[in-house]
Image 1: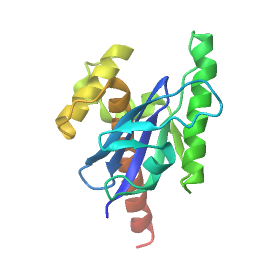
Image 2: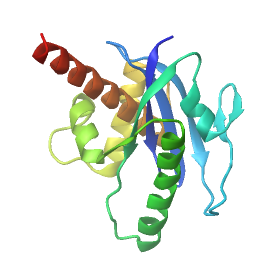
Image 3: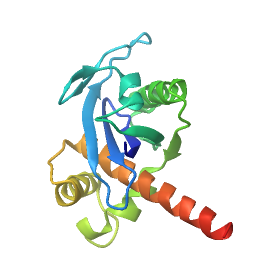
Image 4: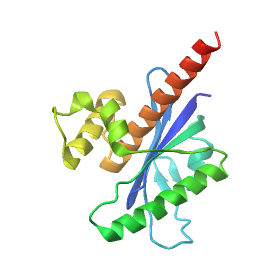
Length: 177
């Protein structure tokens, strides 16, 4: 049973993806979760194999065991309404992770994008549309599948998270000899 990392892009259409925690990341599952604004949201997530709730995404995806979660942190933008709603959506994902016994890490978009998408973007500061397209190209090149923009962001974030955890464990093993 491979260990896996969950990546979450908590926008209006929350993209999520689960990637194996191996040398070469493998995509185990992905989906888009359209979140209404209601506080009592228990809307199921759409996935290839059917409808499952957010908490079940965390429990197991195709036999993998989710050991970590990375949620994309949000910039405060000019759209005041989105700046208020997106953190609530992200908080629901954080709560689902914590209820599943996983302490999620918050990562700013620039951090994971600079570490993973550089070969798919031109030099210099990329616009949002170019970064989204680069994430989709990454998924096509690494996972062999075309994902929506939100799903692609989540998949690349999960692959970044797996890389960070692997490197952290390698450093820990090296320092303890």
